[in-house]
Image (tube, rainbow, N blue to C red; front, top):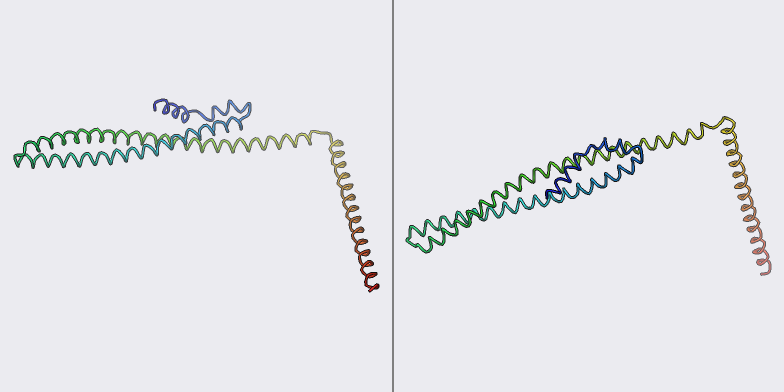
Length: 213
């Protein structure tokens, strides 16, 4: 449990922005995705611990209530047995009352400890969720910066060329498009011509068959 809390503390206390500033010289998106996945796994572990601690606290509470009720019942029975002069019953009830009283004290302390630990876990969990949100925002920021950098790089490749070369490139592109349009139109007309002739031929065949009849 100590090592887990230490790991949690290290995770949530890390200076995210400082880490990422060092990593941005390499591949910031990859580095951030790694930290994000790691933090998501740690946060999920804490969430499960919080749920388990809730159940433990409730279980301690039920056990304490049962023990306290039985201690009160045995104390009442001890008093009744003493008043009736039933020493054997009174001794048994007294031993039972002591057992239940001690158990109730232990369970009460365990419940208090569990509640204190639960409060700490919930604080850690909320802190880690905020860290995850910060990292996701950071991820979007870096992705936006990466997109802008890539777009700027692509534009600079075009605009850095000489004017004549740029015009030549766009001229070649226009010529290619014109040739493509001509080929598409030619293929279209050819297919239309073939289809039309096939239709005429079919009509002639049908007409000849009708004349034979």
